Length: 618
Image (tube, rainbow, N blue to C red; front, top):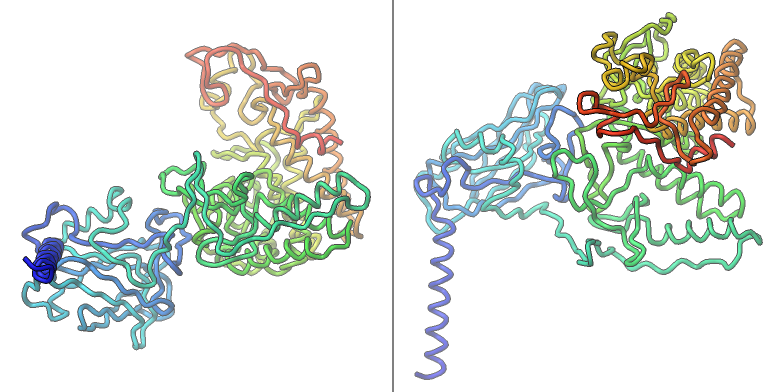
């Protein structure tokens, strides 16, 4: 056999195998589907898709909340199954308010086009799947050896523009149940090639127990000054800031941005991709986290370095990050993508939820003076949104630590609501943690003073007063909750544990393991208000100023009482304490009494001392 004939035979054999492979892959008519409960092919969009959009509404499941606006992106998909007239094209439709009665898009399958329109719907309608027989695109007979080539684009019509969250080829309408199920949501595609816009392909470095993404561009090491103004502490702060501005700024994924990463691997000097806490659905793996709420002290560091050294780059880096966040991640609710359960993934540039789209702030204390200086109108709008989302009752000022991102009308009128002092005998039916409440009070106080809007300041003072007025008269300790979560003592979670021995140990009044986070937030209000009064003349109505001075003095007394009653200097620990001074540390929990705040059988343990409480005290 000559080499030429041998080569020819191998070529024919390889072509035969390729043809057989293609036939096997595309010869999937409805009668040969391996699992008839599943579509023969599908694609559900996710956070790794280029240019994807995101639904912020909490009633949409977080792993099916991504969609394309077809006026901004033409979608090209190849469904790698053989066309068959028994098939239907399924489209995941995203309803949204519109001035027009319907929204439309152009769908093309293998060269045949059709304009599809559906009612616009409302924001509160959930996304749904609708189907179109493929016979409407000229597929009247089985087409072995071919595939579905689908294009979705803007329709030239008098309707609004369509939004879609996925595509599928089904052989039976019952297969849509799989796409709606938890199992279906976990599988993003099958027998599908996403051509355009396409998915971002991760570029990773595998290491020991870590995964890091390569930067788009190389980074030069920071040029560190040996000594800054002959001060070793200022030098250390400047070196840290210089290093972070080199290694900790977004240089990953789809595009660069001035946002800061939450962390940098000290060995690879890149931002690691990690899983996320509070991820109930197990979906948010390998994220490069950027949560600006946790960067507030870094913003304070950058601003302070510019003030102390005269070097403008520090302040500018903070300003660029803040401006970018407001421009790209301020939602229709006025609130930013940040906090306990919402952040930006720097690799995909997408907002990521860990508990649904919930806004929660506890102990962050945003640098409102800096935010307001960079974006005054947007900062004011943000505060409107925070109070609109979190305040449950404007009469009692009962609030929830979780606020939804649903859009509300924000025209400043919320601050004109009437106020009638509700007293303190109130029951919320929910949790009103002080470390959330002081966040809301502090934000309203600061933004109200900065914007010279005494209405906003007044509401902040009212919430502050509701806390301070309930301080124990003997210890001066402020309650851990604004109000009792329940009126029925039988349903009080901590009374179930301690009530037989200590009847005052209700959930509202107990510092679980010392409540260190609570004191940090309370002290933050004091420090911020005093600093603002020191640095600038605070113009307030005289009655409001007197009320604030009274409440700020109540915070001072609380801090003194906290370190007298809760802090144990001998052990350098925080006592498990009731606000009336009852020390619960060492109380023996049994199987019949264990529960919230005391989950383990045995003596109740005291709490560790976070370093952050000492600046509050000093």
